[in-house]
Image (cartoon, rainbow, N blue to C red; front, side, top):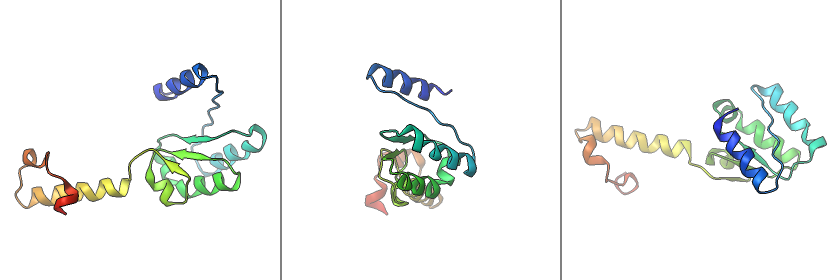
Length: 123
C-alpha cells in the first residue's frame, strides 16, 4: 500500500469515515470493482492517480455514472470525459504548455529566462 493510501486511511479514520480500497489493474478488474458497489453502497469514490486508470478513464467515468456513485478524480481529463469533479490538472494543458516552452527554447530562449514568463500571455 502506498504512503498516500495510508494517509488517506488515517485521515478517514480520524474523521470517523470508513475507507474501502479496491484495487484494479485491467478492464475486467475495474468492472469487477464497480460491481462490488452494488453490495457496498459507497457514499463516494476517489479514483487515485494511476496511469492504467487514466488510460481507462472513459470506462471508469461510465461505470461511476451507471452505478450512481459520485466520483472525484485527480485529473481534469476525467471531467472532460463526463466525470463529476476533479481536483487536479489537465494533462492536455500541461502538454500544451510544455510545447510552448520547448518551442521558445528551440527558437533561442534561455531556459532560465522562461521561469517567470506566463505561457498563457505569450502563446
